[in-house]
Length: 128
Image (cartoon, rainbow, N blue to C red; front, top):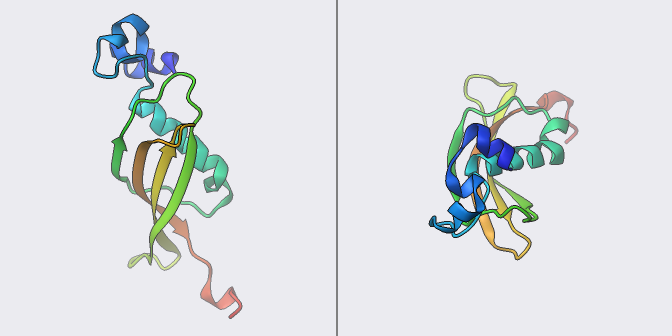
């Protein structure tokens, strides 16, 4: 966590325990971008690497709701919000996900909404 912060988000609340107490975070916490990286790893391991994922066109929204502390254990919930076929590429569709991260106390610490581009099955090869 601190190695990431030192290179990519070197703010006091991510690097210095004493200085972090004086910030609005009230103590050492993970960079929000680090937490986004953890979410990406979790969804990659959970399903993306074993799917027909073609990437994502961007992120609709990310919210950091509570600080993630150095020893927090994080849990992921993924909800499919929408599914639609691509208008320009019949072999591709979009799956809109709402991702939520929770700490061990069950508090929601982050939300992220994005659409993943996914390969579609050939309708002729799918049994009715």
